[in-house]
Length: 130
Image (tube, rainbow, N blue to C red; front, side, top):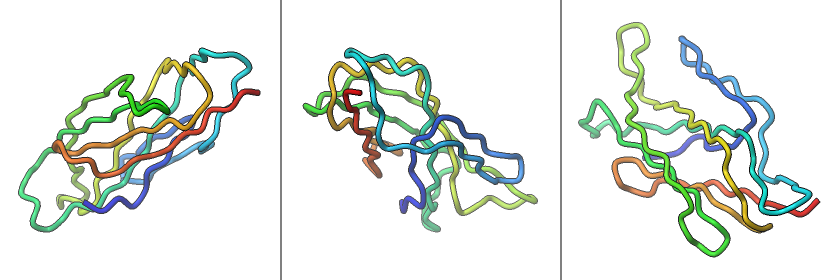
C-alpha cells in the first residue's frame, strides 16, 4: 500500500464527499514538565488501495512507540473504503483520535501504522522541554 498522507494534527474530519479537513499539523511538541499528558491529537492518513487488493475491509493498528523503541499503547480499528457515487474509491482516508497520551520524557516518539498486520508507515513526533 502506498501512503499519500500521514500527519499528526490538533483536529481533522473527513467530509461526506471525501474531502479531508486538517487543522494545525505538527511534528514537535513542547512541555514544561515530564511526564506530560497531551489531551488530544489526531492522526490523519490517506493510502492508495492496490487494484489487486481483494478485501472490502482493513484491520488498522497504530502503535505508540517511545524513544527507546518500546510500545506504550496500541489503537485497533476496522476500516472500510468509502463509496462515492456508487463506486468504491481507490484511496482509503482515515483518522485516528489519540487521547491523553503520556510522554514520560523528551525525545523522538513514533506512531507505527499497520494495515492487516503489515507495517506500512511511521509518523514521528519530537517532544521537547519548554
